[in-house]
Image 1: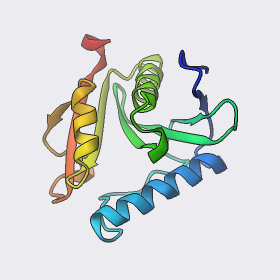
Image 2 (image 1 turned 90 degrees about the vertical axis):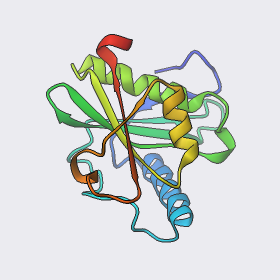
Image 3 (image 1 turned 45 degrees about the horizontal axis):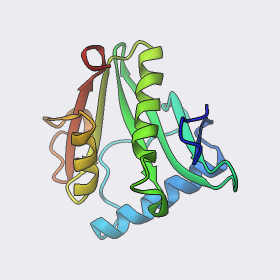
Image 4 (image 1 turned 60 degrees about the vertical axis):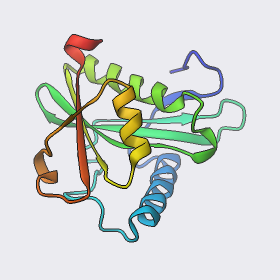
Length: 161
């Protein structure tokens, strides 16, 4: 799928796609540095078995992977955003919003009208981003209940898109 902005192309790819795996590794290293270790994600890690849709944004000229994001089905009408990440040099370009909107569109296509996500207490930039994009802070849900480092958000796509 080509985004309206020719600075990137959004592509649905398998979870184990090498470019997506490299982006997730970069994200993990950044989060490990922010949190001072790797104990910052409660619950089972996402995998090919439970990620229903995964996007990678690439530079159309160089082919470099710039961003990624996935959807994990929670129930018949809701999904969780997993592994939203934009490489540092592409931040502030609108790419994160483009990935988020593409994930929301994919959710609606699947009948999922509630989007949820977990981010962390040491990620104020992510918190500001999701709030700016229409997500509302909610109590911790699922595996995040009781986590001292989690912050959760939700957006109802049925009434907002």
